[in-house]
Image (cartoon, rainbow, N blue to C red; front, side, top):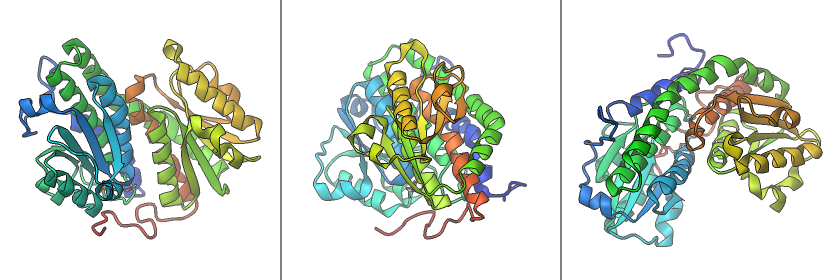
Length: 370
Ligand code: F6R
């Protein structure tokens, strides 16, 4: 039940920290090694994996995009992310050394199920990342790594998304451990940083919710939104855009920030709201400056700019009309916190417009037809 929350969506967003913590729980030992005993794929098989293809739809596919950045960096093997409904029909290159990772909250998404069946027929191993025990997708996969977000009732996915990202990080760290592409100390260090993420998400919930609601009130009459992000901020931008169109029925488009001058900037007109995910400025991060100059460009054309940025960012307040702050955290892990204000923003916009945030029109919680 809703337990006093106005909606399941509100309750489930506030369960983001728990979803992250519970998905980590029991997946490492006292020495800080990753332990995925439940994943019944032999070490010899894992060692030989030379490519990963993530198949998923919607929000789950954006979790897959985040996984790509982390796993390629840690494991040094290519990770492709493919919408499940596109995958099967293009005769993808699959070998016994390809690991197909099917990400699905419900475990019943027909497009994803058909994709994994195809992969297995071609001789590849399939690992499911799933939130629903015993659903069709985990049943038909070679192995499963469950997300422990708890049942997700609201149609728009929130806590399951952060849990999917955590499961994908665990898979990446495990592969790095098995293949020896990272030192044990490095893996341990990232694991420690991951364990800090629930409290960072909690900080956003405790300290930014009011700020987000104020922003939603200011933008209630906006007809469209652009979302921009770069590197891991790119899938976060896509997810923020999807949440807002799904439940607030506002036209949104998410872009890679670098694409701005290749087309989307033509859409920017006076008053156009543009949401930008700003990477950390620490360590003289070159991406930070590039994204800041993107904000500058849209601002110069009169955009109303909303930034998601790190506390202490030296530049952002100069260009952003509104800032949703995130605590300091490692770049590869930052999607876990950056998505939170965007989930809240979509919910606030929908509530202010009087829509049912748990049951958006035309959508079903699990799409069991192709
Ligand atoms: C977005 C949303 C959908 C699902 C997609 C996949 O909020 O809920 O985009 O993410 O339909 O569903 P699952 O994860 O159940 O396969």
